[in-house]
Length: 360
Image: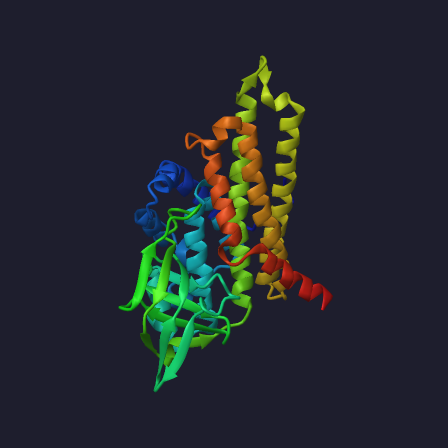
C-alpha cells in the first residue's frame, strides 16, 4: 500500500528472499510440514545467504544488519513456510543477539563465530512459569552449576549444537553444548512441525559457572518483534490464498468473491494484515533507533499473532469444507498461527505486561 518505505539495502534483501522462496522453498513447504522434517539443506542455504546471522555483528562474521532487515526476511520466508521463518528468528534473536549483547568475550568468540559457519543454536524455556515444579532448578557446586530439574521445550532443538536456557528467576541465561543428561524427545505439536521443536528434561547436568550471563528484557523485545514478523507472513499467506480461491471458486454460476459474507471475511483480514504490517515495522524502527520498545513490542506481539489466527480461521471459512483438508495450505496456516501465538508465553501474560506499563 506504499505506507512503509524500505531503503535500497532492505529492498535488495526483500527481493533476494523472495527469489529464494520462489526457487527453493515453495516446492517443498507442504512436504516438510507433512513429514515433520527439519529442512537442513534449506537452512544451509539460508546460512550461505547470511540470513541465519543477519543481526550478528560483522566482527563475528555476521551480516551486522538491523531489526527491520530481520523482519523483512522473516515475513517473506514465513509467507511460504512459517517453520523456516521461526528457525531464522530464533537463531538471530534468542541466540545470536542474546550472545552478542550479553555474552562474555569467550562465549562470543566460541559460539557467535560458529553460527556463521552453519552451526544452529537453540533456545530452551519452561512454558509453565507459574509452576515451580517445572521451572529450571540450578544449584551452585564449587565453580559449577548443577541443573537438577527442568522440563520444557527447545526451539531449534532438533539440530542445535548448543543451547541457551532462560532462568527467569535469576534473569540469567545458561549456555552450553548438548551433553549427556539432557533428555530430548521429539514432540508432536499442532503447528510449526518442521521447525525442530523438541521437549527436554534435565538429569543432573553440571556446567561451569562461566556458562551463565545476565540478560534484560531487550532480548525479548527483539524476539517478540521477530515472532510478529513470522505471524505477519502467515496472515499474508492466508489472505492471499483466500482472495485467490474466492475469485476462482464458483457457486450458483458466479464467483464466491461476489457474495457479501465472503467479502466481509476477506475485508476483515485485509484490514488486520495492513495494520499488523504497520505495527511490525514501527516496532522494528523503534528497536533500531534504540528507543524503549517494550510496550510496542508486546502490543505488536499480541495484535499480530491474533491477526494470524483470525486470518487462518477466515481463510478456512472462505474455502468451506476444503479448508479443513491437507489438500490446501490454509489449515497449515491456522495451525502455525495458533502455535506461534503461545510459543513464548500465553497471550494473557503479554496483555498483563501491557497493562502494568500503562496503568502502574
